[in-house]
Image (tube, rainbow, N blue to C red; front, side):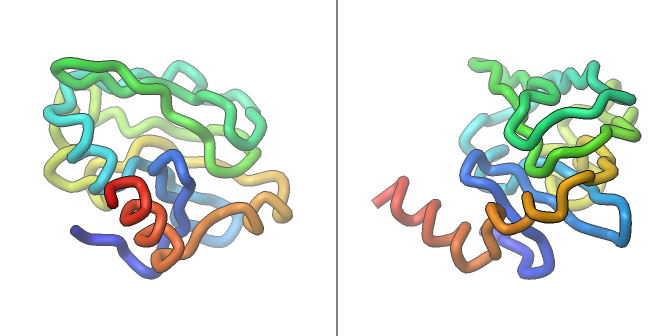
Amino acid sequence: MTIPAELKYTKDHEWIKIDGANATVGITEFAQGELGDIVYVDVSTTGQELAQHAVFGTVEAVKTVSDLFLPLSGKITDFNKTLETSPEKVNSDPYGEGWMIKLRPVRAEDLKQLLDSQDYARIIEEQHA
């Protein structure tokens, strides 16, 4: 399983890549594997400013629907429109073409609550021991 070292993670299995004043968010390879085949991604919060851990959308797999939680407080600036017609990109390329939203973070202190790749790997290990 891939857990890129340059990303930060949440205990809820979202990843975030900080790029200056902006960030990209998606779900991890582990999360998409647990969900199974993704059939729909719903994000109706574009343009809204939400708090860290707020639900910013949902992801629907063949047998379940899961909430998506915001890793950092901020304004959602973009949704990956490719997912409207090709939600399976979340399964095939969760850290690339399967990204979900772009975000403009507003609270630098939120970063302290995120996990690095090693801590995230330990969380997965503990959950499936």
